[in-house]
Each structure stands twice: as C-alpha cells, then as structure tokens.
Amino acid sequence: MRRFWLLFSQTVTVILAIWFIVTTLKPEWISRSSQDLRIESRSVPIQEATGSAASQNSYRSAASRAMPSVVNIFTTKEAKQKPHPFNDDPLFKRFFGDGLGSQDERQFSLGSGVIVSTEGYILTNNHVIEAADEIEVALADGRKVSAKLVGTDPETDLAVIKINLKDLPAITLGKLENTQVGDVVLAIGNPFGVGQTVTMGIVSALGRNHLGINTFENFIQTDAAINPGNSGGALIDTHGNLLGINTAIYSRSGGSLGIGFAIPSSTVKTVMESIIKSGQVVRGWIGVEPQDITPELAESFGLEKTSGTIIAGVLKGGPADRAGIKPGDILLSVSNTPVSDTISMLNLIAQLTPGEKVRLNVLRKSRELPLDIVVGKRPRMSRAPDADSE
Image (cartoon, rainbow, N blue to C red; front, top):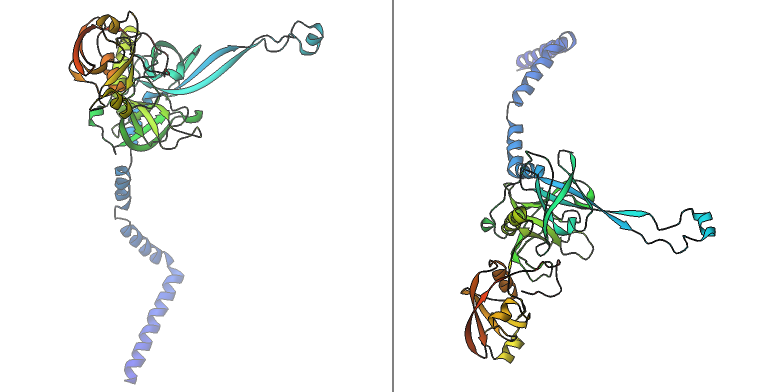
C-alpha cells in the first residue's frame, strides 16, 4: 500500500513539473488550445436567431414604405397691423422713428400631408392650409418646394395641393372594408415641428360621427399618438397602405390623450378625385333644416319609433319647397333607402347628383306620403357649421 502511494505522489509531481515547464517556456501552446475551444463554442447561430425574432415584432417595413410619401407642410400668412394713432405726432416720431404697428407680420403654421400621385398631388387637411398666402412642402428626402392650392372641401376638412415635381413616392390607398377594431395602425406626421415621427396604436372604433368636427363625419378612432402638427398626416395599416388622414384629437391639454380621429380612405378617395377633376366637391342638396327625433319629440308626434328625421325648416323657393315638403314632415327614406337620423340623411342626399329626380317618403299627420323632388346643388359651406342644413 505504501508503494502505491509513493508511485501516485511521484506521478503527480512529474505532471506538475511538466505543466510548470510548458507554461514558462511555451505559453502559446496553452493559449492556442483555449482559442480553439472558444471558436468552437461560437459556432452556434445565436445572432441569426435573435435577428429573426426582432423582425417578427417590428413594423419597420410598413413604416419605411409609407414614410417617403408623408411630407411636412409649412404655411405663412401676412397679417397687417393697423397704424398706431400717434404715428403722425412729430414728438412720437422723434423717439420711435416711422412709428409702431405699420409693418407687416408673418404668421407661421405647420402640418403634414400625404403624396397621393406621382404627378405631385398632395392631400392634407383644409385647416392646415386655410387662408394661407404661401405654402411650402418639405419632402422626406430633404427637398423643399412651393405648392399651389388645387381645391378644398371644408365640410370634410380635406384639401389638395400640388407641387411641380415628378416621379414622387405616392402612397397606396388601403381598403377600409378590410379594417376592424383592434387592428394595429401607425400614424405618421410632424408633431410640434420636431420632424417626421411614427407612432403606433390600434383602431379603437369605426364610423364615429356626431362629434361636431365636420359636417360629414365617418371617422376612424385610434389611440396612436396624434399631436399638433400631425394634422394631414397618414394613418396606415401594417402593410404601409393609407387607411385615413389624421385630422383631430380629443384633448384638454393640447397633447394626445389617446383619442384621435382620422378621415377614412373611402371618403378621402371620393373627395380627392372630385377636387382634382373639378377643383371642388359637388353634392346634392334639397334645402331643408333637419332635426333628430328624440324620445320626447317621438312622444309629442305620436311616433312608435325614433328613426327618420324631422324637417324643422324649409328654404323658400328651394328644391324641397317646390316639391311640397313642409315643416313638421318626417323624412323616412331617400330613393327607398331608410333614413335613420340627420347624419344618415345628410350623407344620402349629398350622394345624389344635382338635377336628377328622386323619390322621398315623408310622414305627415300619421300618413305616409311619397314626393318627387329635383335635387339641387349644395352651396359651399364653411367648416363645421353651427347647425347642419341640407
């Protein structure tokens, strides 16, 4: 037993001696062996797996596709001040020169827009360019160019401007019928003038109306952050297609509270094509003042249901007056399409072609009465009127 222990001790001593000699005289042998082990351990494709997971959770392809189509819009307006009443006083001129308040002031505002045609047509909000003397567009690639106004539609708060550049990156219009509540959307614009920005959210609601923002309302509601300067920018789906034009927010502070509204692509397409073709949007009109049927009014009129709209007033000499419609009549349908409320009535009549004859069904003294009417052309209205009229 003692012999075996002596042999073991001698063997360990020899191995340690060899190790000491190698580490002292040939240290590169050990470092080379360690490097081989490290290279072998790196052969696992960890980096590839991480990159693949990141791309699955990213909307960068949609953003990169749409961002070149979104522009920044800068407008200026000349604001002339009234001359100061003391400008003609010699003593006043001695101290203040030519006077105060006689120079022009330039008022600046900003917003966003979306390129909808390779020929240079850009869609934005009417309130972005309203009353502007000069309009300048800054493209995503850094170019800046002056723009001219093609036409506006204050009742949907849309406007079309044009720049003299060709082969521009036009956005693709998405299909609203494929959009549902809960879908992921991205808002692109120029909030507070900081530069092009992308925010993410979902579709919170569809078909929002009765908000008092525009005459014709059919908004997409989203919680994607929309702030001042985003107006006229794009709301896109996860494929980079345009779902709507960002136009308004609900806010008590001026910043985003998670309730934003966009004009849907279906409305955008109709208005845009009409403005580019004729410089304006032509809508039907019959010359009445409608009013929703409340439960109290339904009880006073002896109605069993609250659908339809009450004709509160009739414009003398207008299409409705000539057709025999009277105040107090209840409009039930337009061309056999039921009328549910004033918003429904406004949209149905606006879609009619001026000059065509249509059939209206009204309820008068508990009796349904058909009336034929020749549709007129809707007069140009100011944005967000106090009372709807049709």
